[in-house]
Image 1: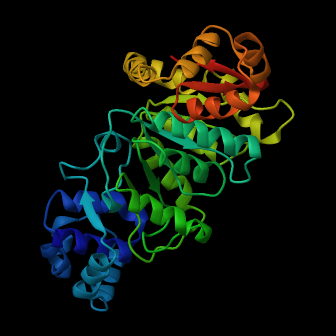
Image 2: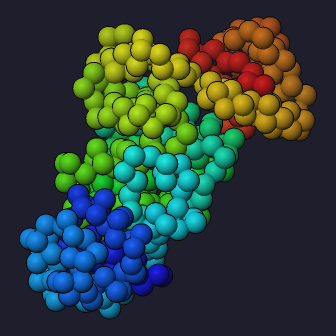
Length: 364
């Protein structure tokens, strides 16, 4: 642990996250240890335009804080801190407007070739939850990293789906890393850490509570660290649309998944589609956008190479035309009792996919 970053974290606690630009400016000039021990006059020399009340607040509050206590808390929770100046600071995030000067990290933060944010309604429908988990799982199976915010609903399902593949997931919090929110996602929080293929990150120091205004700030990180943003379900005034606004400002690709026309939580997605977002109904729509479709096809060929005669017959049957289970049975003369478990295995292995109308199609 870089001790300077612990001092910056303590300063962040005193001044609050809204002073991030000031903190970033100081970090580029002097070490954390040195600044922490400056007197009033020296601080003014470095920051002549800094409000006197902030200087006084710092001098007063630092006397009440212990470096050793803060350091031990971070060590106990296995939290790493990196700064904007570090080589391992996420490159996508470094290029956004107002990047976080500090990132607090639990787990394994790795930059993948392709990272996709998935966001949506907290009060998601059964359809939305199923689709989010499926798309996240499908993308993760192609080593695409899934970014989300650990919230209820779509975020939760996106993380869960991502953990089923090799891409892994990053959860961005609107609180300190010692404050799990919502509390019901403690198991998911721990599963991400145990997977060895994911991380929990935040720009907020330890002890920070999940205040309402923290979540729009968190959303800029979700979009900032990704290459594109998928909205699964969102009402017309959904907070998820804040993430897409940040994404557009940051030059990210925006995707949306359509839903039933009479569903209030699909209104936001349909609005995005009308405004030019790319429609997503399978992982192919995302992979082809980033030129990774050829890699996906190669993976699929490798998967298909080990298929049994029965499996090959099913895949060949639905290669060019989606069919229901009954239609496949009729064409191939495979009894339903044999067809049902075989199709389930093909779905799990990512060889075929179920689409609208309870139909199946080969996805290579």
